[in-house]
Image (cartoon, rainbow, N blue to C red):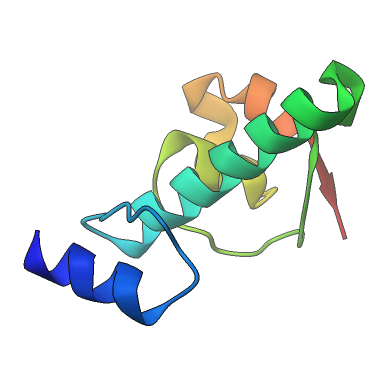
Length: 87
């Protein structure tokens, strides 16, 4: 709790979300961005943009966002992958 308070006091943030790994942080950021866009612009604006063949982590959403079928095809990750536009 002390670290969270120090981070809040030193930054613009009013809340802190701690993660165990970069993959969890990326997944949380993707979900937060989608929720924000959905709430602000509606369901048709809740997609994400990601680089094709990029590595974002090993969670279900992050491997789907990376656009690498070899890592996501056997995990039924179509919902996350379908919402991503790959560059």
